[in-house]
Length: 197
Image (cartoon, rainbow, N blue to C red; front, side):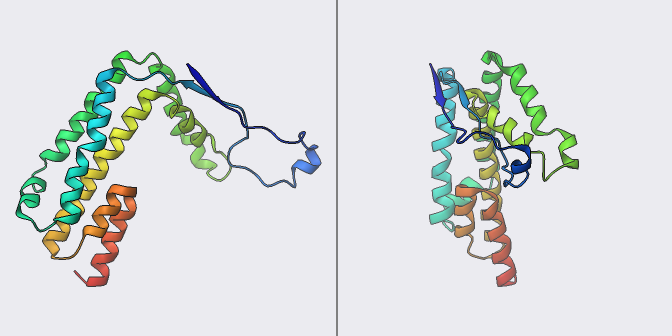
């Protein structure tokens, strides 16, 4: 089935003279038709759940039991990150093999990284629109979500191990790596700076 979100335009369009006085919006107000919301193949949905929930046990260890010998034994090797990276690769390969929108997804992804926009960063917002279009694809969402979670775990593990090496408290930074990613790394850098370690 298809879902539709209607974004009304409001009053009639202003004249060109009046339009020049209106604030510029990053994205146009348009009717947004969502893509087919059919679920991805079962194996992809299962892998999505695996990479969403199983790493949380590792995060709990790093945040709440950072000095426990079991936590160190599990997190010092790279294998936990490699394991969930493999889940990401599994999702990518499965989505690519069954997704009928591969060509359109790659075309849209090329728009996200259109080099011409670098010459017009403050007026051309087409990359953001292209990313929004990609997020309508269940396959792309599955790939992108697993991508983000695997990299967050990689960075969170590094922050945890660096905190152990420096002998400083890093649980708050590790937690933020899990919740919102890059701010956790910034928080760890600030902690190191403040403590002089």
